[in-house]
Length: 130
Image 1 (tube, one colour):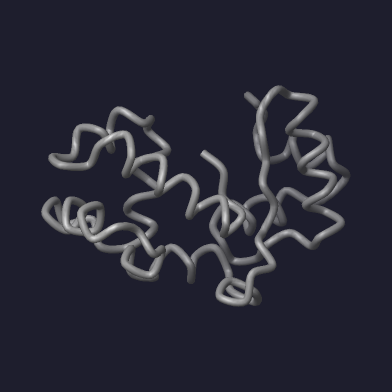
Image 2 (tube, helix red, strand yellow):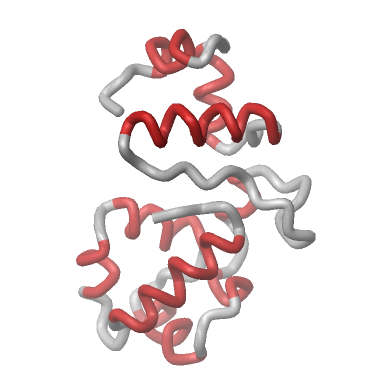
């Protein structure tokens, strides 16, 4: 959105430290805050998918989720093998690459559009939208 943490904190009436904690995965926003974040994001023209309430991520910080093995996302064996071939073994590594754009993951040998779609779908199940 082009805002600093402080500016964004002011926008949603919270502290800058809280924004930092969300960004680093130290804490996930509450359900009420996630709703507010969704509204702010929508107004700004992008989608925010709040934290998932699925049993395998409930109570886990984003940082903990980032350190889980990619294989736990339930991707196809082909997608998992392609990611492992380039040493992408943790979810956080894949998220960092995906944050740079779809092309970065599509550049991974044998990781095609179907694998990318599958990855995005699995991440959405965990409350992450790309």
